[in-house]
Image 1 (cartoon, rainbow, N blue to C red):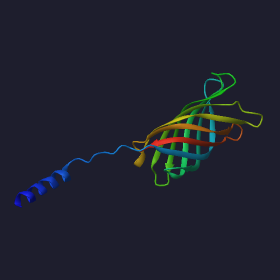
Image 2 (image 1 turned 180 degrees about the vertical axis):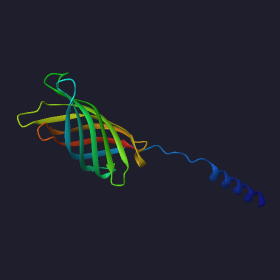
Image 3 (image 1 turned 90 degrees about the vertical axis):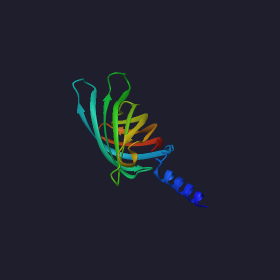
Image 4 (image 1 turned 30 degrees about the vertical axis):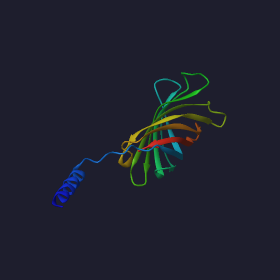
Length: 161
C-alpha cells in the first residue's frame, strides 16, 4: 500500500510540474462593420494621396470598437481604377485590446457626388492583449466619399487567437 501512495505522489508531482500543453487557436468567423471619417493629404506625386481615418463600429470578438487606418490612394498606376495600397488598420475593443490588420484593394473612380465603391482583402497580423498572436484573413467591401471623407466598410473573414 505504501508503494501505491509513493507512486501516486510521484505521479502528482510530475503532473503538477510539467509544462502546460498549448492548445492550437481555433479559427472562427469574423464580422466587422464600421464608419470612419477620412483625412486626405497630397503626396509629391499628383494623383496619389495618403489617407488616415478614425471611426467607430462593431466587430465580433471585440464588441464596440474604435478604428484607425492609414493607407495610400493611387489614381495613377491603373488608369480608370482607384488602388488602395499599404493599408494598416487598428481596431480597439472597449477593454483596450487591439487587433491589427493590413489590407489592399480597388475601387471605382469617384462619381459626380464623390462616391467610390471599394473592395479588397485583409490579413490579421496580431495585436495586443488577447489578440497578441491573432491571425486571419478575409475580404472587405463598402464605399467612401472623396468629397465628405465618410467611409462605410464591412469586413468578413476568419480569425484565430
